[in-house]
Length: 504
Image 1 (tube, rainbow, N blue to C red):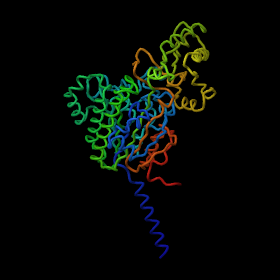
Image 2: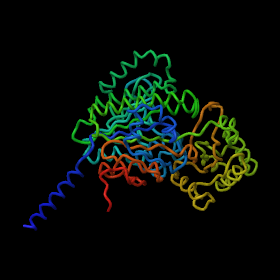
Image 3: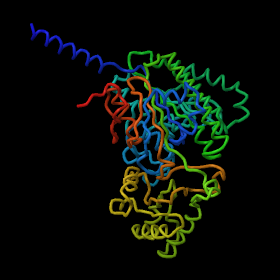
């Protein structure tokens, strides 16, 4: 009798465990807020309403020390790293713009595809430059492609790269036609629900008045939330037998920051209005899927430094770094020392020098010597801490943390040749820059310390101050879903988030 009872108890335990492991949320939602510094969570906390970001903070799990562990800290890289669980070294998205084998590319540009939804070229895009899978790709694979995955943003790259290769759809705002569009990579015609959204946009007088500058206004966030809710309902996300995924990115916070900086009424308004959009989304998820039946994470692709003139006004060290002048003087240095008659630098992008290898070869110059001359010149330039040859990173004098960030951000065919490290709060500044605005891309916590909140299905209420990284997000989500990590994943699942975790 005792043996039978023990056997029955064991069977019951196995059944309960199997039920737990088979249980899945109906919907996973990833929210990326472009250029959101971590400290904004608490700077605006008292101004947030109870059912928006404050709801995620108070009822979810907050990772208070989430850092980006690569350089440069750029939009396309950040969005990709969040969803792939890896860094440019493996996913290959090395900037918004970068070079592949000497050819300049935009991260999602694809001339093989055409725009769906307008007559402009804004939809000639795809995720083909992405080398790895995403959370959504793994979810689709796990469910034999029964799951639906949709990306929505103002920016094409912020909708396409998070959603991944196998996404059902990605939508972004065409600033020429002032409507949401997609690409023939996904479809040949917009679904009716997107057409209805665009019909409403055509009647929006505020949008018509603002025009192509819509990204610099909170209205951009409202329209993004509208499109996300339309996709939620139109695709019936969270209503099927398999877990679906919605990838949302808010971009207005980035454009507003670039123009007006980290302080002031424009930025304040941007985050108060963002909070309202988050609240609308959560309400829509509650209604469509049911409270407790969905999993949300909120993070950022990068942060931002304080405007250097603002810093100087308050007697703090800061300044603008004029890369245009440096480029001219660096070419002169190579000409003077090595006799170059043509340019040897193809570009300076995101604090990296991309050499013109063809020009160097045609001139009969030794590429190693060209690098040495450039590095020596850079190291004596104002506000440059150091410059290093990417191929010599492991034997460089960089501190371990910086060296690891450089290595994690380096793809040998896509990341350029020389990395430039600036002093803290010095950043690239030129004729294209706003005198009151900010930017990002460097290694400092201003740019690299980002928010990370988990909320909803099987998420603990609490927080941690342990250091975690941007590439830990994807394996954490995949762990909660009990699916395989993306195929180039280099991060680790964050302990303490999942309520079903048990000690081994």
